[in-house]
Amino acid sequence: MESTESYAAGSPEELAKRSPEPHDSSEADSAEKPTHIRFLVSNAAAGSVIGKGGSTITEFQAKSGARIQLSRNQEFFPGTTDRIIMISGSIKEVVNGLELILEKLHSELHAEDGNEVEPRRRIRLVVPNSSCGGIIGKGGATIKSFIEESKAGIKISPLDNTFYGLSDRLVTLSGTFEEQMRAIDLILAKLTEDDHYSQNVHSPYSYAAGYNSVNYAPNGSGGKYQNHKEEASTTVTIGVADEHIGLVLGRGGRNIMEITQMTGARIKISDRGDFMSGTTDRKVSITGPQRAIQQAETMIKQKVDSATERTTD
Image 1 (spheres, rainbow, N blue to C red):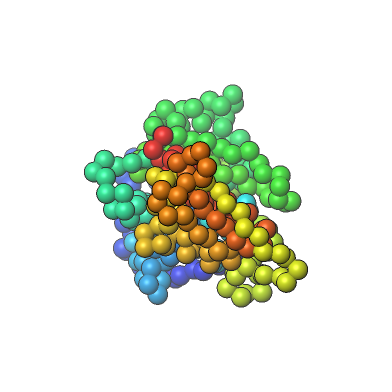
Image 2: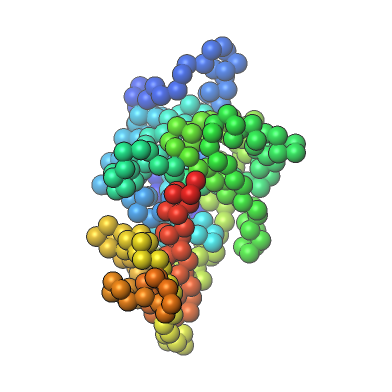
């Protein structure tokens, strides 16, 4: 996945002064140490970060001094339908860049929710397996201290052996914007101490695009599903709780259109009151080749799970 979308950084004079100034020379040296951070965003969120004609990402780079790169449309982290954003620069620049992105995404989600109280969100960082030990610490001491200090939830996923050669794990942070940023400050400082981690900045997307080619055309055809004639089209019906149907649809049907475009499956939702037998779950019928159905089902589950996690945290 060598090809990425990137935009030239602007003048460092516009660097946003969001972090407190270091207290001594050792802290100053640390703040200037080159580093990077990678995290996952949905396709829709990636478009929001880029902005019209790249205007938003260019502005964020000018304000932070960091370089911000995205994996291309349809180039996802293995096993997900999320794109990867990498921010690189000094620790201070990376934190500033990440703050700008998360502030924008949080404010947009907050506006959609319409709640006055800031809800708990989650962000998934991509961290090399070899660097996760430093975050965990002996007997889990380091991660426990990070959780106590930041008040954020921090969970490290096991290494997924489904994908050959994958050496990255997901570190999920849940909490308010401030809690997440405190956790990121602690984690990034720990990661930057690891020389091997710093070397990975040269290969931000070290997994082959072929991980996704089972579902998506690798020939630059916009990522549409390869509908081979030998693949029979079938229909699978799943149940989704009535109160969660809005999450599947999205504002103005945005989510269901995104799922349809990415997978090639056709999706039909039953009318109000038309439930799966013996339940209050609405019927969601997914039609297409088996692989398209599985991908669409996964995306629907992710939409519902991400919201239910926010309400239970």
